[in-house]
Image (cartoon, rainbow, N blue to C red; front, top):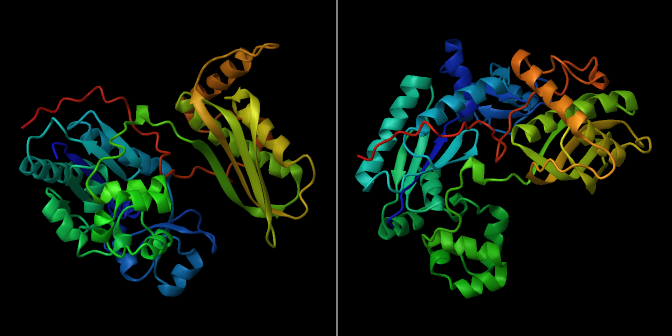
Amino acid sequence: MSNFILHLDMNSYFASVEQQANSFLRGKPVGVCAYLAPRGCIIASSKEAKKLGIKVGCTVEKAKQIYPKIILVENEPAKYRSTTKKIFNILSDYTDRIEPYSIDEAFLDMTGHIKNWQQGEKIILEIKARIKKEVGEWLACSAGLSWTRFLAKFASDICEKDSYLLIDSIAKMEDIFNRVKITEAWGIKERMQVHLNRLGIFNLLDLKNFPVANIMQALGKPGYYLWANANGVEVQGIRTQEEILPKSIGHSYCMPRHTTDLKYLAGILMKLSEKTGRRLRIQGLEARGIYAGYWLKYGGGFFKSKKVPSALFTTEEIFKAAQNLLFKTLPPRAVTMLAVSVTQLQPLTNQLDLFYSLDKKRFACQAMDKINDKFGEYTIFNGTMWGLGDQAHDRIGFRKSVEIMDKLDRFSYEPI
């Protein structure tokens, strides 16, 4: 128990950012939508909207039925990323080991920077106050502090919004385990609950006291992780952004125009490939696998993956690999959704092809990236995307897809 792990989770994040930016939205039910079309999904609800039953995943149409005066705004990813960067800049004043778990939450390894739980509590209050003062008074966060990554997140999940909870002893952990539902634990949802119930595990204390050999025999490695988490044993630890290699990078788009027109579909696919390629190149990675697919009108779809002989890096390489997977033949019905992602990611090797050089294509692609970085997205783009300026626009990334952290060379916090 010599470790100190802090978890910070922003409350109703996208909606709060919108309310911070526009004072007329404060105190009112607000829903942030992927798209404002009737079938568009709400990706964030303000606390006022949540009280009315308008939650994440609710459609625009359903939200208006629940509360006709709901204020709906389309998401602005650049606004959220900018706000998150300010928050992470504050966090980097306290430790050099930060794991950005998503765009609105992070783990901080405070081991060595604080000496006891009281100092940790003081840091939490200081961070919360600085976020309100330096980023926005309407922004609230929950925080948890404990000796493992699991317990820190568990604490922030179960505490009141805009509050914090310390789990600083085995006795306190067991007392909380005895009071909360098993599904409130990070990683345990309804399906896992069914498996655990079959083993005679009905609450977190049952899980803690269950023989580890038996749960591993029944559930394998996931069973050990659950048991270790419930026993306050650290399994994974904090991993900084530099230490986390994503498993895949990709984008999808539900198209307003349902069609089999290959020219239109190619334009959308190229735009998705460009968005995917940009994120791949920003992280200094290349890919050895491609995954692409589409959904069809009236149901059904086609999805396929393939390992590629040469690493994918440029937008054109990603596009051609996806196009070869999907459109060798005409889709049987109108396509309603397209998706593309690159897999088997690895650090950029700059390995040359045996028969021809890819240098010119890669240099040209990187030059386009620099122009778009300086003058704005799609200042220069492939002609296949012509006329698609208002379609497949930027979307915000969630779990493990946040490229917001600068190198934390500004770390300067002194232990109390």
